[in-house]
Image 1 (cartoon, rainbow, N blue to C red):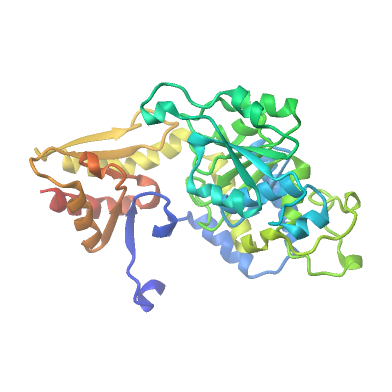
Image 2 (cartoon, one colour):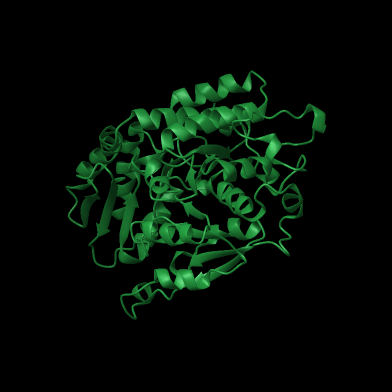
Length: 397
C-alpha cells in the first residue's frame, strides 16, 4: 500500500501534462534521491541559494540565478525586484507602491491569469496593443512603438510572455527597453524544450527570466528558476529569504548579496510567501543538471516510446484518426492527437469516461470541442501506455 492509499487517495495516470491540479509529473530517481539526502541535513539557505545561483548561471548564461516555489513565484519576485531595487524601505512597503516606479507594461495579447503574480507585487499593469490577429479582425498585434509610447517616469519594467507566436519579437522589445534603461521580465515557464531556450532569452537581452522547475525540467512541482541580472537577483533574494536575524550576525554570501550595497538589513519581504526548502532547491538543481546532460533528441525519443505503443494500438480502429504532432521534430514535446470520426461521437463523454476508469486517466481536454483527445507523454511512465491504450479503446468505441 502506497502513502496515498493510506490516506484514501487514489493515484491517477496523468496524460494531460504538468498541470498542478494533477500534481505534475514523476521525477527521476536521482532527483528524489537528492531531495531525500537534502532532507537529512541542515544548511544555511542563503549559502545554498548562492551555490544554486552559480549553477543556474552556468546553465542559462545569465549573470545569476535563484530558486523559488514555482515560476509564478519567480515572476512575483522579479516584479518586486524591478519595483524596489536594492532599497530596504521600498521592500518593506510592498505591495504599497505609492511614490515608486510601479507600472509594468504588458502586451494585451500576452495577458493571462498568471500575471496575478506581477500584480501581487504591487504593480499596475499598463496594457498596449490590440490583438487583431487573435480577434479575427486583421493581422496585426502590438507594435514596438506602442510599447515605447507607454513608457513613463513610473515604468518599472516591461513584461513579456515567451511563445512562438509572441509579437513583437523579444529582441525588438529588449532593444527599446535598453534605450530607456528599463528591465524586461520574461515568463518562459513552459518554454522547454528545446534545451537552447535555457540561454536564448537572456542572450536576446532579457533582464530576468522565469522557468518552471516542475514541467519539462523534471524537478519538484513546487519549484521555479529565476535567472538574470545580478542586482535584480540580489533584490529578489532579499525579498525572499528569512531575514529574522540580528544585523551583526547577518553575513550573506557576497556572490548572492553584496551587503555593503545596502543602507540597512531589509525586513521580511513580500516573497516570504514563496518559500522554498532545501529539498526543492537540491531537487531542481539535480533536475537541471540531468536536463542539460540529456540532448533534445534523447528526451524526444523517451517521449515517443510512451506514445508510439498507444498510437499503434489505436491505429486499427476505424472510427478515429491518429496523429503524433511533433513526431519528427526533436525540439518539440510530441503529442498524440486522437480525432473521433464516428458520427455523434463525443470527445466530452470519452474524456469523462477515462476519468472514471480504473485507474483514472486524465488527458488534455483543450481540443474536446473539435472532437479531439490529446495525450501528453510528459507525466506518465512507459509502463502506463498499455492501460492508457486499453481505456482509450473502451472510451471511444
